[in-house]
Length: 260
Image (cartoon, rainbow, N blue to C red; front, side, top):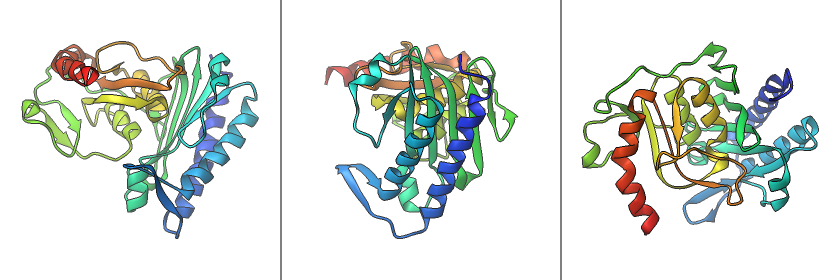
């Protein structure tokens, strides 16, 4: 388990990074695509650099996995590792929309034990520590008590016809914030059916888990972090009462993606 007070120090570092991102948000910064469909900007790199310096000073022995840093296999031998997305939801950041956040997780023995999302444009700070609950702006979070899949609220821009019994709610670009919506009881289900990166979800997975959500990959299997690939096949976060039904509904689609 993390040292006493460490979560507060991580939250302070996330807040510093959030202030930097906010100060640069409405300025003339460079932007480009790492690969088609994957935008990045100068600010991503500036925030990444700040986080690496500050977090390394906190735990010099911890490994590092970040969207904006070249991966290094040495992290695999580390018991503890920082898993970071300096700006999760870069598309919203570039468009001047508030659906982005600084995401920091401390992973210990393959599972997140501290998670922080700092979303300054939304005036939100989400925090969790393993065994101690999850909070937004200091208020304890709890998932919604839903036990039927039909009518479940999903952050989405559109839904396939087969899911027309679900209810769309507003969707921030940040997948971490969408998972956090489940933690806050503002959504009942978030699911992706594709390979995704650990840095996108590590902090939010702990926040949702500590709020009582059920969390698995797209096939209902436990999630693990600091894996060699740094990826997992999808994430499914939901109210516990609908998780099995959600896995069952998505299973064929998930297997089809894996076969492709």
